[in-house]
Amino acid sequence: MKQERSRREFLRRCGPAAALAFVPTTAQCATASTAAGVSARKDLTRLRAKALDGEVHLSVYKSTPAFQSKTGQERFRTIRVYRREEPAFTFGQDYAEYFDGLSYQDAELIFQGPLEATNNRKFTYVDSTVKTGSTYAYWMAPAEGEPTGPAAVKVRDPEVWWTPEKIEQATVELQKKHPDVVTVNTIGQTVRGQKLRAIRLGKGNRRIALVGALHAGESGPELMIPAFEQILAGHKELLAHVSIAAIAAVNLDERQRLAEGTPWYLRTNANGVDLNRNYPADWDTVDYGYGLDTSDPDSMTYRGPAPASEPETRAVMDFLRTDPVEAVYAFHCLASICGAHLLGPKCAANDEAFKAKCTGFATAYGLGMDRSLPADGVFRLGTSAGSLPAWCYRELGVPAFDLEISSRESEAREKCVVDRTDRPLLEAYQQRHANGLRAVLEAMIARKL
Image (tube, rainbow, N blue to C red; front, top):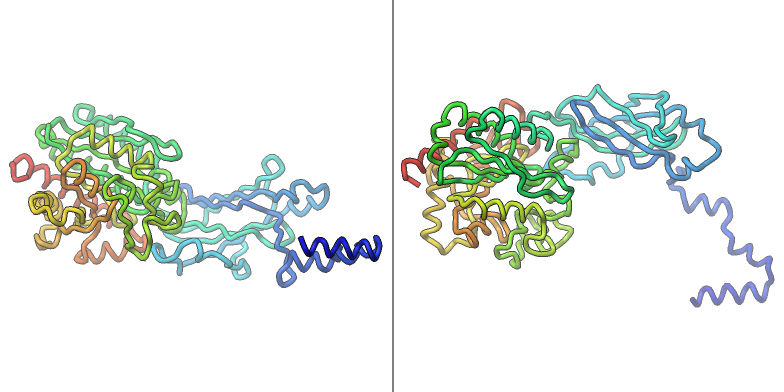
């Protein structure tokens, strides 16, 4: 206000010509909008990159000034596409910041030519020369001017990272093949409205539950459904006595982003909430694991604004309340792999009877996966406040576990933690989980559990 009064007083005393002193010159305007002589304004905006069926699909729009301009449209007759492979990018260590400030100057010009603009504004380009397993940065530009970008993308193997569409197809196919023992129904939906599906195998009154992909960048459907197929093909008789209830993937929204090429690890749901901190069990207790804070909305372990605030959380709770179970196995670790390291709820530390029950269900599964493991090295208490195992203990009174991976599974661990899971490794762990499930079912039938 004081500065504005001084300006008005100066104009009153010196007359209208003095107003020129307050008008920035062209050079001043240019200085305000440039850095090192390069305009900050780009002709293209909203560059996106998606990996679909082994190709990268790019889309970009003319910026609002460029679209509205009556002149200069001829520069859009030629579009340039630049690409740079980023082998140094490391999943689980690097995130979006890795790509901040990357320059196109040493990138490869992979296309220069005409592209038809949808509605005279949107350009699309498909790069079919990419390699599965590689991470790329892309830029796009018209014939002249600075490119827009980078847009980051990783081309993943769709057999290793299942899309929501593939999960649904595999679920429906499982029911079609075995309609006598498999049922499928919708139990809720995600933040973005994707249907959450429950799979039930068998008719036995005693039941265990499996829950997958609470964290999008971890494991679930790629292990569960093939394991179910193996049990149905070779050990179907078990399901006359005991049964399995499963949600193959909970965090479908963010899993879709990963399957479509987001290079970095995604943990929270579409609302930015860690679903494995959102359950109403000691939710008020703040956890500081990983150097993060579960009460902080900016944290990857944010517990949410309230207990069970998320539709995915409520769907899982309703599912487990509807189908009483004797144990719950939640699949975690990374990149579609989890192993024989089962974590129970820390809040049960003083409940010896409950810990003994947990040990039985955990050991049966873990040693079923790998009999070379020491029996006392499979299970420990470790899940935090607000986790699914904590809620299963507090409300249901049943053993529940987060399946991670043991230090003895070194080869698998080294690959999956950096998103290098391949088909042979995944197939080996599909077999391991089929063995673990079978061991639990057989122990239940034999009344050992």
